[in-house]
Image (tube, rainbow, N blue to C red; front, top):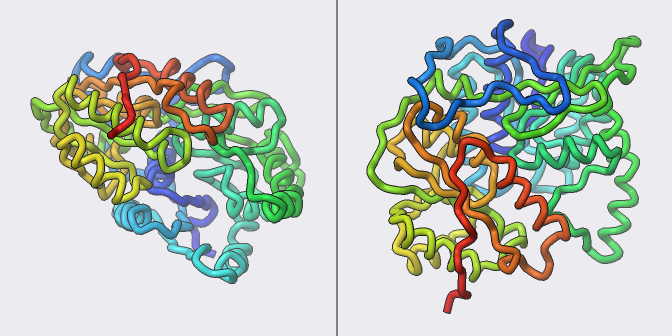
Length: 392
């Protein structure tokens, strides 16, 4: 095993890889504050337009970490992951690209290839605690420390579910799959339960030591049961990129709420059109999961320039050019962009999702979860839900 594999990270998305770099940057600085008291948050920006641009440490000083990329199959995610992997290597990280999908034998081959290093790692960092493959890897973990870095707003649900002792289920998941799906879930239940126990601090790890559990996040969460919280204020991103050049226009950020079955596509298109007209938006930054067909329809209906970023939006916005106003529906970026863009003069605004936009198959948790994402966003401007008639 390589010397850097004492700290082993598993990522499945570009944002997870970005946040591993942010964590490694924060952990390399002994002066960075660790928050572990319920109800307390880490350092927050004073506001996107308040105060001068901070001057962080120079980039390139990260805690040694070996990053294992478990890529999904969609081309946009894979492309962004390759770009992020290149940035990680530039920062001195060891990056291993490990295919774990795409064939029936790929997960087994990946597990065999990784098992020894997983058992030997002293610190294990994961980006998606809901991932079944990550949960399978966690059954092998003997590490003294387990760290969860942000996978977007899912972190809010992860902390809440572990606090309640519930099984880990994504907020937009409604179940289904018929009898085969129920059989698979039943067969997988012991693995999921074992992984969930790994997230309980003070459990006995290898050689009788106590396991520490840390959450590294930009989300508004309260640690519980001995779990510690370290605030992610995107210090590495601010040290590495920008500040950006600002345009006079307004940019709109897309979401995958249609693709996850939460929001009706026609309602979504109508809301985007209303926002673009009201606020003079000219560009639409697509989420990596948005389908080409949906984006073509949005372009025709709104006249917006569709931009498919090759990196997470926090880096794209930080590099610039970027609009003086960024509009978003409830999503991760309403929490992360105020950090990444603090001191630059950019205003981040969030538009509520009208419950009428939700599909009949949306999870019962969808309405309250999306409202919570908006209600807990700080340093952003609130916009009411747009009148969004179905697209004709």
